[in-house]
Length: 633
Image (tube, rainbow, N blue to C red; front, top):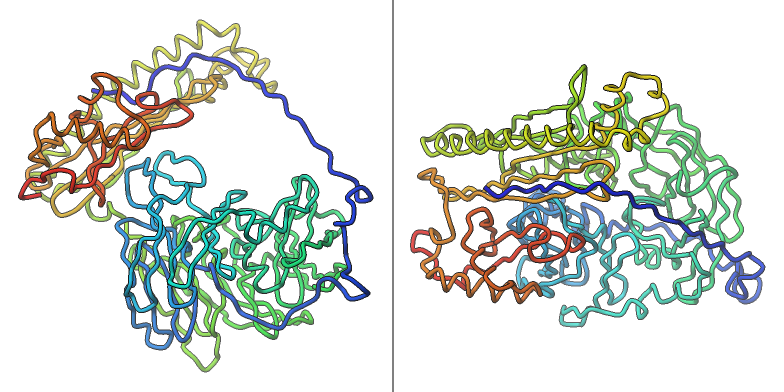
């Protein structure tokens, strides 16, 4: 049985950090400007607008669009009649689509194991026709690891450039009149005007700080004519999108943008302190901050109209997620509070395990006379809306159920945990074991296989733990330096436990693939022995026939000979730049590597097998058409 973890030689790495001082204001030269030519302010307010580009719901011409649970769809605003524009084989984030002209542009990340390495860019007409794959290999904004893909945080379009954004990573495409797309040099886009900024300043992109994720660089340029820029040293400014001239934005005394959230409306900027004190600054150059509204508890910004801002107000605090009940209030531009909806959820609870970005209160927004929000629905997550009109519908309408769990009704998880406590020294261990609901004899057979597998791994974990404890005792004289000061006078076993708790060995079995005929399971393990430089991780895969309960090999799926299988796999390994070494082509026949995707047959290679640790695990995914598939596949 292939094991996913090897022992780590303990080592320490020290790193020296260097700091770069920002230029003084006087030394920044002529690019530091708060006025344009003459006496007119460089920046000012703009007429009222409502732009939900990049949001989880985007509206246009009597329809709204959403991309939830792998389904890109258009809904009639009045009837909620749905037109499916595209159905992906895997769950999608929901916010990586954009309306532009006659088309919807969107991303798909195919469900290719926990180490999937494919991002696709599509376009489709708004009526669901003319589906076109524009790029089958979009640059990934980071590394793939443990079931997570480094998705972009936002998609937006300005003039003829499509922007994909994640933090400081930006990928750009130039769109042509026929709806095609070609990757563009970032210097030829909006980001080109930022080259005049002093060292240390960069465009504040859609992400996890500074302001909500829908205020992308294109959004700001399109609606306000400027781009927000910031620095690691808490500097904040705005840059004219046409000329590159810029203005420093002084923050309220004692504040930094890293501690607060900046919200933009057509006529002012808003910052909140702890969600209760809302400061306002006009859009005009040189404006000062003033207290706009003081709330009795936290408020959550969710949109504005011509008269003021809408906020969701939780009925009570129970942490950052899963609050029960909330009201919607409207605070006018002059600071007067108006109650709009006394109850947003009714008895529903905001979905806790939604895709990234679907968090309680952070993705409530107002659009077209409705409040949209995510909450539990039919045992899963759902999106609802409720009318803001007193004469309109007063009960929430369920628009769609999304993110259906692959395991729902098929399997469940049992967790085994071990940690050092009492007079026992142990490495903290967690083992999430998957079991099928035994509806058929095949289910029982697969569970029996899993029981044997878990028994084997439990013995392995026990042996690993014995070695770990021996290492702790043998190297204790050296390891004592990491005992917390507050435990300096504690018993030696307690001190050892405090050091042992900084290591871990975690395993989980997950459902990797399921259809009417096949079931794919994966076992992922990650282990770290403190004070090692890094941990180790790896996976094994198990493919079953759901009709018989038999475990499958690649030769059970294809009619190719073993020699042909090895040759095809070797060709695809070379295509991803990781050619097999001599004799390694035989690994294509190993069961522990085999998995299925909607695109083809996959072979998993753990770290060090095809590439270095830094490059991570590798998958070789071979399209079905490369093989002679079994007739009953």
